[in-house]
Amino acid sequence: MTGAAYAPPEGPLSILHADRALLVLDKPAGLLSVPGKGPHLADCLLARARAAFPGALLVHRLDRDTSGVMVFALSPAAQRHLGLQFERRGAQKSYIARVWGEPAAEGGTIDLPLIVDWPNRPLQKVCHATGRPARTDWAVIGREGGTARLRLTPLTGRSHQLRVHLRALGHPILGDPFYADGPARAFPRLMLHSETLRLRHPDNGREIAFHAPCPF
Image (cartoon, rainbow, N blue to C red):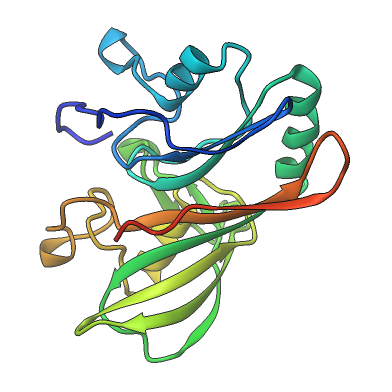
């Protein structure tokens, strides 16, 4: 969390899909996925989901400042099924990011191990000695006068992975309060959005994809 007061956005749930097993929402930037410590951090997407769908169960998380597709289970059996997909990397996620500077290449793979930066928690850092494997595919999809728009596909699921990897690449995500500095930080929000989530439906095993248009 940053030092700024928590002021989550208001408004109704943005429901992308709902059936007896799944609830898929478009999380706004600035809203916690789960409650933080203390009553002032109780408002979160999980709480809002449960207010409308009392059986909603957590499957995965997005950072507070990241927007986009987030799936909840509506039964314990669906939660177990979906949890295994995320654990075994069966669920496929694609993000859009705007970054500082324009990469010389059109794409590639970032393969840098990550570990928590203990004196500066919750920040993460690259550590080749003790870090856990972390890999991210990236591709340029637009160049916008000194910035670039990238499509990011995480091949592992480490905390802050995309944010740390892009900084290590030399192109921090715009508006990142943790990993960007100077003019790259001076944007109204973190320019990172979970655009697409592809998984297998827990009821029938069919592959299904959910999409939330990028808001920036």
